Length: 169
Image (cartoon, rainbow, N blue to C red):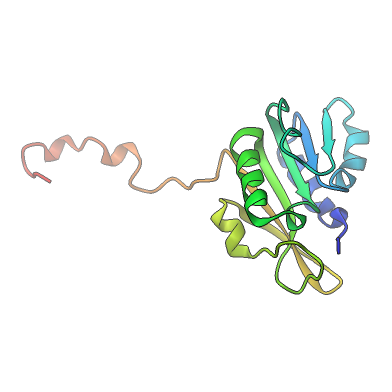
């Protein structure tokens, strides 16, 4: 069973207005469909589409501003899909977007995914959609904001010269 990748088209349009990409990679059977109207307005931006990735499909692709994955991970084995997300997140994408059916009530899928699975891979939920009464969620990983800076990690707490020779820890 599949879902239309165009479910998330308005969310992608908003994201592209905020952060216009310099290059786009779409992975999955119809993963390039949400970009059709955007590509017409921005023909100067290179868009690459890969139907179903295999071991050599990602070799030599280089780095892309946006990588969008739809109708792909749920048709792969769990380990293979997790490795694909890790490679895309770590080496290929500055912003990784994954559209994914969530939950066990999707018949005919090879693997079933949950919110926790995606968070464990370092992704954040961006939006929720519904297809035939079942949830489809859009997750993202952004290289520039994936980790929140803790409060203690700022210059205010680094030196504290007023505490020199007063306390040892």
